[in-house]
Length: 215
Image 1 (cartoon, one colour):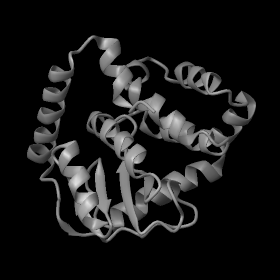
Image 2 (cartoon, rainbow, N blue to C red):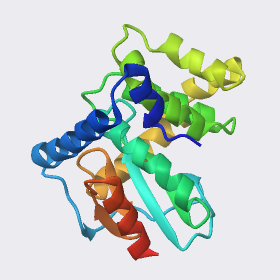
Image 3 (cartoon, helix red, strand yellow):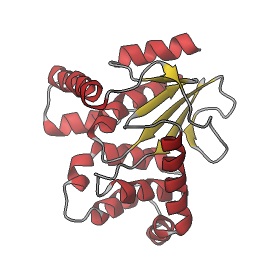
């Protein structure tokens, strides 16, 4: 399985080293401009039955991410999380929670598309497409044709996809996750929790080490 960031870098013709440098700079900027929390006890809810997750339900460790599909930092971290899901998916439960930011005009509609895809068993596939192609749909005049094309490429029933994306239950799910996150101290995206500790690793290697130590 290729990690989410792979196709984006390849499509733009960015050398691996340059891509890695951009990621390091992005993480540094996240620390600088958000006053990012790290290594503090988490106050967000533990994984629940209605969470969107990857990995065993009874895994000894969970990794929770509060994310915004239009957030460029989240797109960068998506590549790391893809690698970690591949490596630890049989031992760690990876949980995705929505936290669309108010300054991102298409974040909520993208979250609705991902949730609608989840109802047809294709959340992670849509998740990867949204982050891989973030620039394409987020800078468009209307993201809906792009979201439809992603749904079609995944073989989704489009009528059901539209109905589920527009359903009040979908809106309620996203709003509830965001509200619980805010109540639990989430202030920016990505907001990451390994076990019961808020973290913000600066590299894939550091993220990997945090998981290994928690296991």
